[in-house]
Image (cartoon, one colour):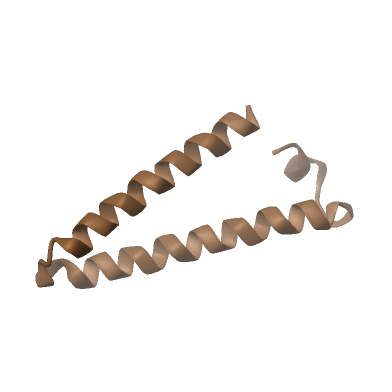
Length: 70
């Protein structure tokens, strides 16, 4: 179940990044602020998620059993 959820998240992130790329290439300057703000938020969330997963793998003794099961 966990693997299926992670696979779905990866697919969703890829779709979102493709949509953001299309928005950048559309050259609609009125939407650039929103587009770049969206990019900053998405990349920040993806980075935090990556660091969280790496931390769980390397420091299992500091992670609750619920987090390890996830």
